[in-house]
Image (cartoon, rainbow, N blue to C red):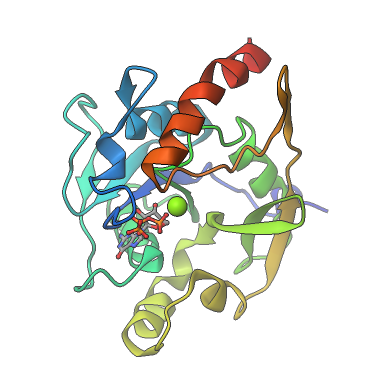
Length: 219
Ligand SMILES: Nc1nc2c(ncn2[C@@H]2O[C@H](COP(=O)(O)OP(=O)(O)OP(=O)(O)O)[C@@H](O)[C@H]2O)c(=O)[nH]1
Ligand SMILES: [Mg+2]
């Protein structure tokens, strides 16, 4: 049984994770252009209809000039502590701005084709409070595509300050997890993984080629 059948579940707050250093890209990934607009805008537009408001975690705010009204906040712990630092900042931001939200839904800024039903399917999979819901495709976990209970914020902060590796999977493994598998997208040129992420200039070229194919499947 879904938890929505036993508990009132408010739509989660959306958080775009754009706080990384984009070392492999060579410039802030949020601001690189795909299909004529900054990558972060693709992700904002895909996530916004799925959540109760959204905000962006960025330590530079580049690429966000054309997203008026979208709040931007930096990491609350110092030193580029990895993706979970962005998740914690998102929880803290939600606590202040949308206290009714029990969860935040995170997506990274470098993944423009993620499923349009990501959040609803993650939410439907939650069966107990405290559970993290995380996306899979083709048997592979995509740990930054997840629903996180905001109530884990204090524990996460302690973990960030004490864990040596601070791997996203390491934090997830400490909790009950709902795993949700998403299908590949069948396009005119074959299957595309919706969680394809853009880390390098070569990945950006690939995404530019795939963008019209994905758009065609969503018409
Ligand atoms: N807030 C925050 N987010 C991070 C940090 N490191 C990575 N991320 C985010 O985690 C997600 C996955 O990270 P990567 O794909 O490796 O992105 P990246 O770290 O910017 O890229 P590289 O420097 O090339 O590894 C992206 O959405 C990043 O923005 C960090 O130190 N703080
Ligand atoms: Mg990436």
